[in-house]
Length: 586
Image (cartoon, rainbow, N blue to C red):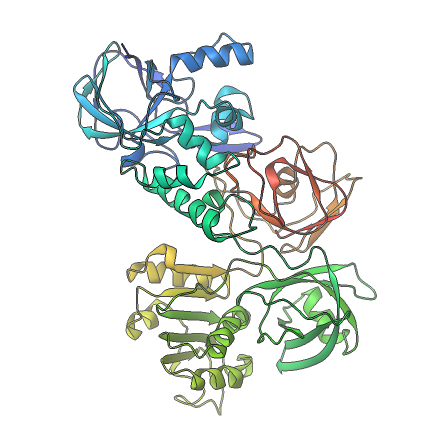
């Protein structure tokens, strides 16, 4: 007979880890006597990170005493206490390879339903003092699982656990966990999992993505259940020489370059909204790597990028003052996920300043296919002097049958005519969005300064637009995902003082930073963090793929090996080391 051995609760606390402060509720302690279990929590319990833990589908976490004994043997330890794995219920029985999604259990006065395996992050490694613990519980098939509270009630240590219902589909926690995280995602098992009504929504979406990949994306690699929709692998690895066949000043400080491949081989089609990385070599300055959105149409013969000269910007200065028609630059293949989603619903393109470039690429594609979709073009600039490619945009808008346009000038100059050059004076902000009556069920593509994108994203959500329909593109470093880490004053990416790297040259393309690898580091994630480069991670052990990042050129080795491989053209920062000189899209 299964039995509840211990009820464990704990509130978020701050702990020191690697010279940082982490907020976590991984420390749980046993309680005496009965405790009330409510829909979202056990009385006295809490979660620090609601993105990964807690909520209706993850109200109670269960771990088995049998797994305690397994890990004691595997790790050679005997110091475990109830709550060691951050669980609310320590139980006798209910093994991961026996419990199924949708099983229901009566414990004390409460009724529960099994919803999903545990999603383990780096904080379990902190609690266990075993950094790789997040990977171990997955690779060894002992994740534990979450319960949803069907009927609230009191529970206490010693309560019997009575199974009242068997879940539809008969898929165990171990099988569901392996289906998502481990290589090989059989179609029949994915389809079976998707027919289990009790499976939590997040896991359901992951399996839907894997099923689409298995059925439709022939040849695509990687785990889209963890990373989201897969993009086609880059057309080539590394850099390819291109000649500058035309250089055109669009406005004061904004220059377009048309680039033709030196070998004359036609260019593969790319997705509208993607970018390339240019390798620029000034005569009297270090090598420069910069990411630029493709801003032109697709003729298979050339790329176009449109570059703004920023104050103090080395790349913009080089392009403006030194680079000439006929010169050769090195370019990566197009890549990026800020791309037009196929369909027939409304498309809303919002940009400001030089952020016009990727959304203009999307507009080119819509015009080329003579799209009948409802299309909105919203743009903000100071005046016509800082409004690049305006006539090109107008030409495309006139060619489309179902389009609306609204341009805002914050400081129009003499000669700018309202109703001709622009529609309203001021900034493109939430107030403008609210007045226009935008289609909230459309897809919104936003590019511009970070504050502009943040404000418009917040404004659209206030208007009722679903977050999944809002797509943003950043020219520089992407926003960080560091769960539980206390915020600290942001500093620009930089080589650490006294750096003594002696290995391969590692270049962070978005951050404009290059330095030699230090073999004392464990992985590229640690290198990026040392350089203040914004990073995204959760498990830090090759499980969750949150840190998966594009690699522009070069190759890596992996130690430890990840549970599942990254997509072709990507690397998992948390377990990768450079094999030679590399360029990373970070």
